[in-house]
Amino acid sequence: MTYLRDALTTKVGEFIQLRRDIHRHPELAFEEHRTSDLVAAKLTAWGYSVHRGLGGTGVVGTLKRGTSTRSLGLRADMDALPIQEASGAEWSSTKPGLMHACGHDGHTAMLLAAAHALAHTAEFEGVLHLIFQPAEEGGGGALRMMREGLFERFPCDAIFAMHNMPGVPAGHLVFRDGSAMASSDYVTIRIRGNGGHGGMPHRASDSLVAAASIVMALQTVVSRNVDPLQTAVVTVGAINAGKANNVIPSLATLELSVRALDPGVRKLLEQRIKAIATHQAESFGVQAEVEWNEGYCVLVNSEKETQFARQVALNLVGPDRVILNGPPLTGSEDFAFMLEKVPGSYLLIGNGDGDAVGACMVHNPGYDFNDDNIAVGADYWIHLTQEFFKV
Image 1 (cartoon, rainbow, N blue to C red):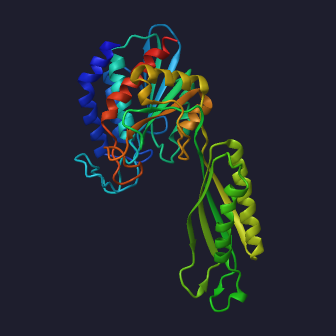
Image 2: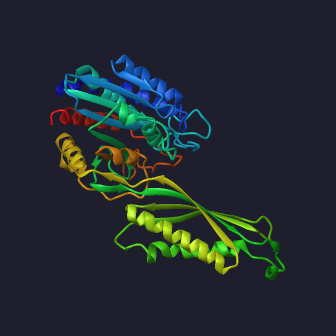
Image 3: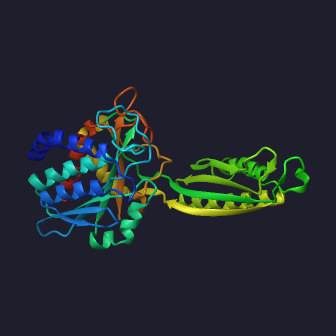
């Protein structure tokens, strides 16, 4: 293990520069061509068997040692976001309107740093699959890779992933058993009425007034239908109707984000939202059409694998830098689909808190990944791999 740490220490500067290079050249979901070229070239040079094309731009690097068929999957995401960067960093995005605002550049660099050390100095018996996934940011890249045969071609006995978390001290590792991140569904409600003159509302069926009533009624779903000990979110993020003050619109549209930490609560939210929209609309003499688009499922960490991952962290960084069972998050993550098929765990690494570098929240124009985490995150992946193949 000392040799692995030495290998990582001497190379970490290279991977910081690699992270910054990826940051300068962000690519949106399923467009990660430059990034996947870089990842594939590095893995090939280090002796991994490399497969490309799953999910379009996905890359899987496999390293086999010995005769054991025991297999481990480690996953990193690669895509950026359609946000104009305002971090002020020297390595800021060179692409207007695009930036790595969620740290996927850092996740990729951490796993590559671990890949280098594992390929050059590690001794283990088993099959290691490194999964570099496109389109985590709403594109469902994990699901697409799976539909195209990810786990049939690269079977894993367990799988793990790591995400940075602003607000947590840099390098601290956070674990959670069970439901850790929320499902995320996208809902469009179209309210259709009879348009008319704003001065003669009695001769129209007002879709906008019905929409306003539906927005208010939806606020009761969480407060009055969901168990207070459960977590749920119903957010109306957009309402669109009309263009003039003297015209009653015939169509109003609501856009919702709906989240839950329990599959049963997720189903309840769908039932109640559809019922409220339909019956509220009818009470105003208009009609509501609900388009329900399922997004990411609830992310559920398996108990055995989470305990294993937690113990690796305790051995590596000590109890003062490990949060044994952190709070659940109402953000969503498509690694959840992988965890439905393969036991595993999704953990967090602190990106910085207070006024520290890395404390700015993800999906913010001022965000940047904390480069100090590349050594910590890579070291964690190295230790987890070594320990997994000992079990």
